[in-house]
Image (cartoon, rainbow, N blue to C red; front, side):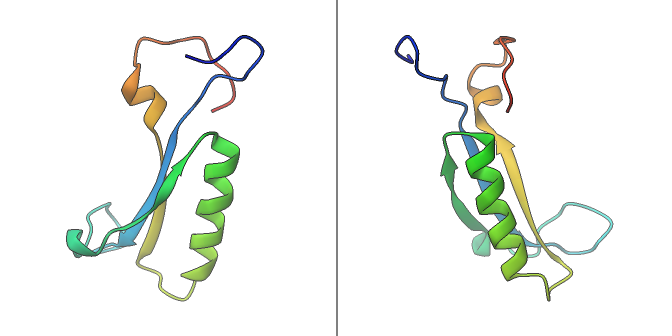
Length: 83
């Protein structure tokens, strides 16, 4: 639980891999997924996502995603905040 005055932790996962086609989100090889990391805010996750996307710009089938883990961990929380 966040201490009073500290922002609430909003965990985000950044991961990616090569897709089978441009028309759907299906990965070519699940054993080769790139788990970039888990970040304490959307802003930090977005920075990691941008860096990985830039590294792989030459491969049109490579895609990275941000997953809002805090929404999966506590789906009933509607307190909001920029996530």
